[in-house]
Image: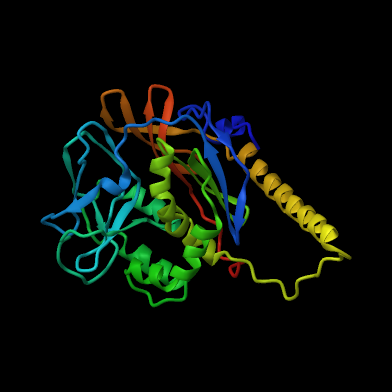
Length: 332
């Protein structure tokens, strides 16, 4: 899994991933992460530097780019959890020039019944779970702070919680399980992105400008964007683990190596099938924002949707998610 030419068939045409490479896949339960390495594009403001400031309305968010020289690429579907203010999430990405502040009028509250405004400190960083992302992207530009409440309530109900619009309750209830994905999957040196699969099916593709940017996005991607759906798709544990047949330590090590190789081969087959046989059909690209030579566009393909940032024919940033996440195993 060293040649990424197969990814060109995943998103044909508008997104060139020349120079990027896939690494060795890693698996934690139902979630598989395939590291993507590639050319770094330094100089962009790191996502943790973006802090929401006071806004007058519940559907408003202001983000300031404090960097005097770097452009900020606002991560798609970013949100912040505050202790004394509503949690607001964004339905779109954006480009913020150095030293500028941008107000989003189409943000959404993902936490019912809490008033107030951000008051500083270090808010927790999140990315909307994959089950909410298609809805959020479709509602970009719609100025209604409660536009995701019903979708969040449905998501909570599918996870066995009360049907309410509090995303943070879902994240808090499953935090130990979600953190396990972050801990068991290990980003690699030079990693600028990842391919994610849930229960063997493609769930999303994430590309960032450089390894430092990806490192800051890692927890929110592993725990929230993909971990929530992966936790719901977790397979039942085997009733009984078969012991290894080994007479000594050397034979045991050989059996373990053989087992790991077999699992890796199975993962590779799943990934190859997803990359070489995507749905066919038109790919729609709509430019949303620009700064100098950078272009931010919404991409809608038969199998993936999201937003990308390009500089000429180079992919700088991409956050693309599958239209349909793997269904609940309990649903026929």
